Length: 264
Image (cartoon, rainbow, N blue to C red; front, side, top):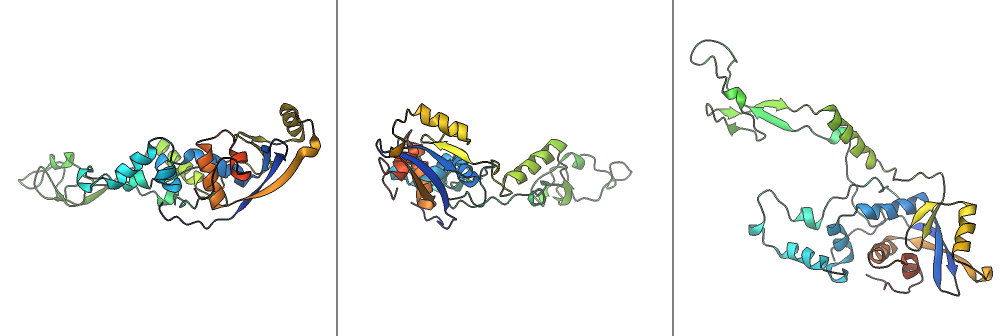
């Protein structure tokens, strides 16, 4: 597996464990934990394969990833890059500074960082109207290029006069929204605690919802229930990602060690 930075702030989560059945009923989670869980939805498949390793993938995704890795550059289209598939950029509103357990690089994006697309026209000093052999060249004005110093198809001069594309208002709004999603605030509000089920279903927590859940699980012996606080770091983040692709009992598998082996 590729070397990835594992430096991240560990998060914590409280599990309610049925010690008789050896299963996690549900967990009490903070905003940062929920942001991490939701950020898994935005992971490109290529990133998931890279994090977990080709050999640990269920199905054929590992084979696809390996095929791209081995593909000679001679077979790749001009302008295309293998890294776009092997190391895709992750841009998610759910990723915050604290919730990025998997050490994924933060996308640097702000309205000021978005550079307008530059275009160029013919550099020949001519006017749209006039007299004389060299005073007009209206055909040159019909050509633009996005590559500096391209030869003008009309007169052969270099196209170096800069033109700037003015984005429409809707495009400005897209840029502003894209900047907002990487501002480090995450996705959910931090005004409540959240319930996370064993299958990673998430909902705002309340005392009434907790009692309802206990009734749903038909818990007879309250004494068999145990609260367990667990830490979520890089290793646990990877295990949750892997288990979420394979299991409906993720919290039990990862924190009670029923199915998912550590060191994946």
